[in-house]
Length: 196
Image 1 (cartoon, one colour):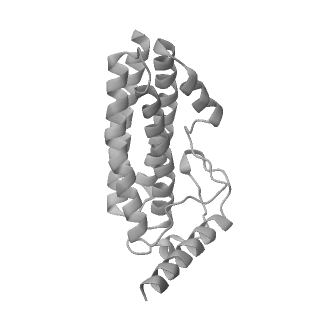
Image 2: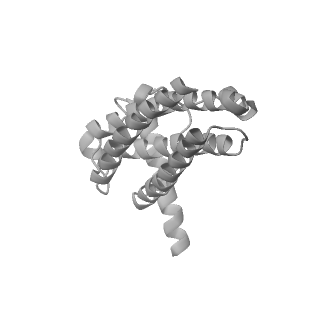
Image 3: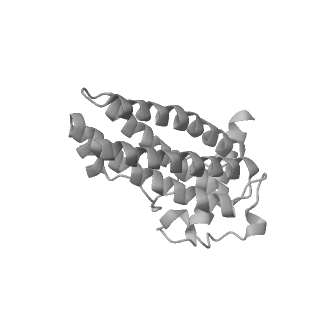
């Protein structure tokens, strides 16, 4: 019975993801995916909407990259202490948020994996990540800060969309928290960058 329920939940989640993406476009600047093929009334399932699902799926990917970028900078030598402290702060904040959003998706019987074809604001390309991995010292610190400013700006845009359109109170609260904390970190990073 347990196996059957797991398969059924996976099938339902896959169906919802496909239904949500079949009518929507492939690109979603700032995560404004407009008509996703689900009306606002039918989209609310288990106290969440298609917007909440898309926010959680997208932000897990977004946060994971921020953690990866932070790990890269923390593995390097001769990085200013202020920059390594920021990288540690980003990891400490975003790691638990990834866990929280993954749990929501499981509880909502939604896939934790985002459907292919969606783009997110502020994501680094494979080339960007390679440049960060290869950079050293102060140049690596500058590159990390520059990339993370853009990355945070994308997360803020996505979070503002969720705060305005989301239905799940926890997801909306997290989005509002991300806007506040990451806008503050953007200013902190600009200040750090100016001092390097």
